[in-house]
Image (cartoon, rainbow, N blue to C red; front, side, top):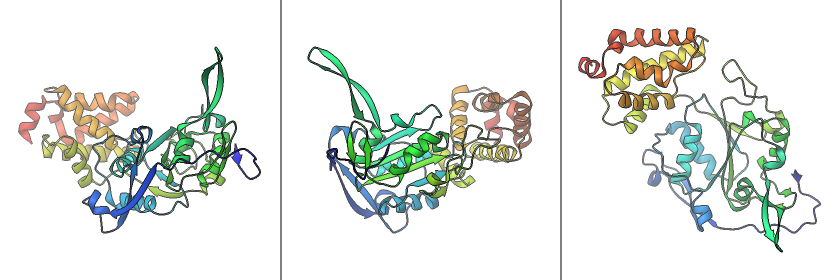
Length: 335
């Protein structure tokens, strides 16, 4: 896979099925500042189906407005969105895509991915009473050609050959795809990568993350999305579970913050992410009258090694006392 400079293959038609118009950000996101965002209008079932479904998401507006401004400007550099596990990186992009009618194609990082399968796949086609394999573009190439958002999820999980294959894509350059021809990027194509790291390799927390070569890293601009501040995290939880006791939610958030501190200092190997907090609320409802410690173990602590598990339960008790042993109806009466 390489950039096309001397190919004589016939260009693949660039399907202009997307129109875009600038609008006030507040008309789409009422909590936004006064600035303009681009909103798409797409035609055709293939592209309409590629727009993500609505998700229950409450954005960190400080970060989200930067993402919106980047997306609404001319494509120069892809965006690398980094942050800890469960902080809402992918959800933020899918939320934006749904609200702005953006078709999305996603590729998930894996050490098993081969560079030659990123852009073309072989499809069986019947002809003259038999079948043959013909090359067809992948969803990534279709999105590159026809416009929309390419989301490279966990880009720091690809090995070096795949990283090299991504170079021309991340330059928004013409590509020559073997068996397909010349692919020109649509002017409304944007690329976002998400990762737990900034490509500097694995750590004690993200051991499967690899070093991303400098040539690929230099093609991106960077933005970090950390865990929400307690007030925003409270808004997120009440958005998902509006009937849950507010004081209980505040205490869950406090426990999560203490566990995250333990994660940073190496006491436990897994944080309580915002995603985990949402799951904890769901488990509390599912467990009904059972003690809070049971839902905590179910959604988080039981995934830890024994010594870390005990440290997590100790943190829960330190934050909320012996009330975590009470049936939930009794605990709620004491709040």
